[in-house]
Every structure is written in C-alpha cells, then in structure tokens.
Image 1 (cartoon, one colour):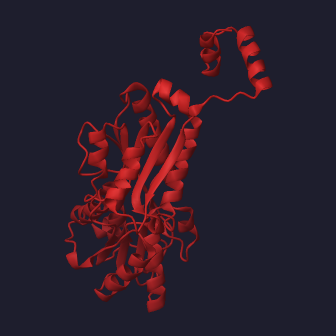
Image 2: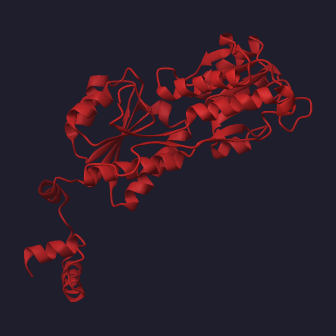
Image 3: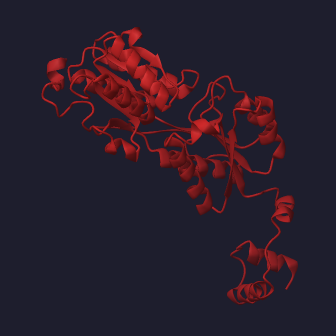
Length: 337
C-alpha cells in the first residue's frame, strides 16, 4: 500500500474501498501500530486538544458544585468529537504573569474555552491578540460583537426570582450578589433591580450584599440582611443560599415563615436542603457542551455558522424555601399588584 492509502484509512477517509481498509486494519492490529500524535500535529497543525481556562484559585473552584457540572459538559462533548481537554486553573501562590505565560506559551491546543473571568483579568485580550480560536462561557467587557460566547439569561432569572418574592407579599427583598467584578454578578444584580421596577417597588440599596459565590459569603450576607430587616433574600447562587440557610438557622430565623429564600443554579443539592430550595434553573451541563461545539466549529472551519453569541434560557423552580406553599406568606400575584 502507498503511504497516502494507509493515511486515508487511519484518518477515516470514506474514499477507500472496504477490502483495502480491511487489509490495512489487519496489519495495524498485527503490528500494534499507534499514530504518533506529535508528528501528526506537526503535519496537520492540529493537536485535537482544547484548553479550558478558569482563572480562579483551585480552592474556590472545587467546593462550588457549579464547576464540576460545567467541566463534565465540556469534557463529554469534546470526547464525543474526538478531542481531549486541558484544564487550566490558577493557584493562590502563582502570579498572573506566570499563569498567562503557562497558558499562552505552551500552545499545545487548537482552541480555548474561558470561564469565570473578572474584568481586571487580561487573559482574554491576550488570547485574542495571540489569535487563538476562543469561546467565552459567560460574558466579559473585553469581548466585542465579533467574539463568541455562550451564556445563560442571568438577568431574566434574577428578575423572575425577585418578582416571585414580591408576589408572595414580601416587603423588603434583599440580595446576596455574585462578584460585581464579573458580568454574571452585575447581570443578576440588574435583574434584582428590574424585578422591583416591574412591580413598581423601589429596591433598598442597603439590602444589597456583594458575595463571592461561596458559602461563607452567603452566610455573612444573610446575617447582614437580617440585621437590616430583610424578609426575603435572593442569593445569586445555590452555594451562597446554603450559607444563608445556615445563618438563618443559627439566628433562630425560620425559612420560609420568617424570611423567604431563593437561590440560583438548581444543583441536585437544592432539592435536598431543609427546607428544599426554590431556585433559578440554569442549564450548566449544556452551557459547557454548547461552548465546546461552538469552539470545535471555529477551530475546524474558521467560523461559527450558528449564532456565535448565544444566551440559554433560565426558569424558576418553586420549592418550599420561598414560602409559596405557606399560607402565612403566600398571597396571589394579582392582589399584590
């Protein structure tokens, strides 16, 4: 067989006869042949490897159940298309410049997914300047209309949560936000204010506590909001809602009888809290999978044929923590309006 014929068999070219393919595969099996990945990468300028970069500390990433689901969605979809995934995370001891160097200078990947990037982080501009195919999970001030991202409708989800609490008759609705240095934190805060405006109610800025998407900031935020007279709290993540539940319990405050609580994510753990957590569902696994599909299309064709800036739907999942099933709290939406 010629080299080109063997190459077509190895690369699954359809323009090879069944008999020829069978003969080549028999010899491959007999010899235990495996393609040399480094040589193929040099020849094709492709590594069939994607990078996923989360420029956050490892100690922040793993305790949050959001990230394992997102990473699973990325890896499963990449594997389905025959790609491997390199996962890059920061550490508390590493300088930003060193982290940028590790990611950018290695170059052993075809494209990059980036998630959870603070506005102050210059990784995205550097990736853009370096010319790497790039898809952002979430949004950033550093990307323009020509750049690709996949996000969820954070503003809508937060707005619906706040409207639900106001519709239950709650008078002082507070929020524990995500980091306002990230677009996701700002969008969910804007949804908080928009929900109040839609109800003709003025939100109290004193009932806004900036959290960090971790349990401890949810705990501190709940204590602060209770001290300021909140009778309902929208926590911008389920992990912060867990901290808020713990704070309420320690204070002897009953959820939902004394204070209503809504989270954001709809992790499996949300249905197992006491009381079960009302929360905004976001399709986390799909977020990772869609991001990978868009990136692979960008790598292989140089362009994304479908919508390159995509926002996935969110919706409210009502359980017991908001008080919708508690007669002493619930009141019809029409009556409230």
